[in-house]
Length: 192
Image (cartoon, rainbow, N blue to C red):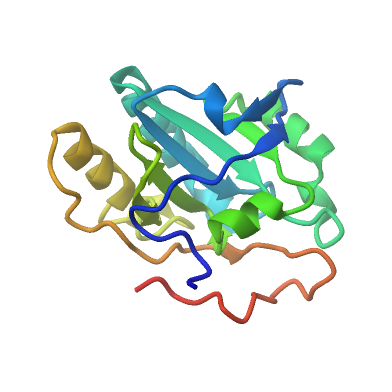
């Protein structure tokens, strides 16, 4: 079995606390398209692409797309990835997405999150239709040449098949609790 969720597979459920003080589960979202992305507070690839992600969220939210970010990084690896720092970061930047905390990392394991950021796009039936990166240079989006996430959203919204449904996420590996900061599960590998 592949480590990362495969195209056509259903979104795994979750029940996670958010920085807004509420708890959310998968069934709370009824939009036609749901984008779940794994992120964190400290990764330079996340920080470098946050404003591009903001533009994408602001562009597609009015079209019935919901964006939910999940931080699964171990606070024992980077204290900056603690829930308290998540709340502070959302207060400072006012990002237009929900920010959930996966402290026990079960959701990251269920989705097979590889890196931060790592995007998963689900259709109305919550089947995976795209996974991977948003842009091809998240560390410096001014040099990015393609936005695979927006391409996938545009194609799906137009009723077309997604031309490139799988790309490799680009970023820092998920920081697994009790492991070296560069460790990845043995069955985690490039998607393409």
